[in-house]
Image (cartoon, rainbow, N blue to C red; front, side):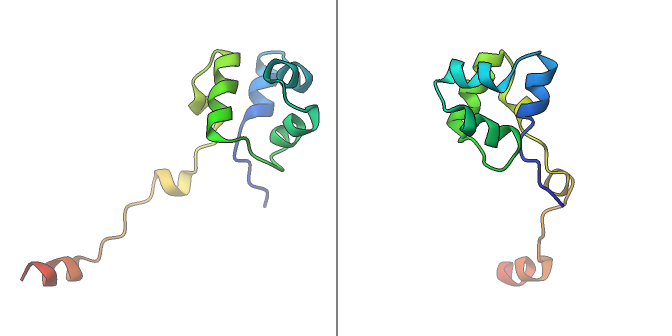
Length: 86
């Protein structure tokens, strides 16, 4: 199962912009931007912020949420916590 960590391709399509436009705007190699759009490589967090500024969006729009993390409860071993407080 493929992991789509970023939504860059979707957001570019929604804004009717191309990979080439983004690569020229950022001064990056078009092949690099293509890899980001296909999720074969990921931009750094700093670069995601720059991309978000170029697209005039919140950086969180570019990141796919991980439902397993978002909706999971933290694992707490209550027995260990109780034993350490005794």
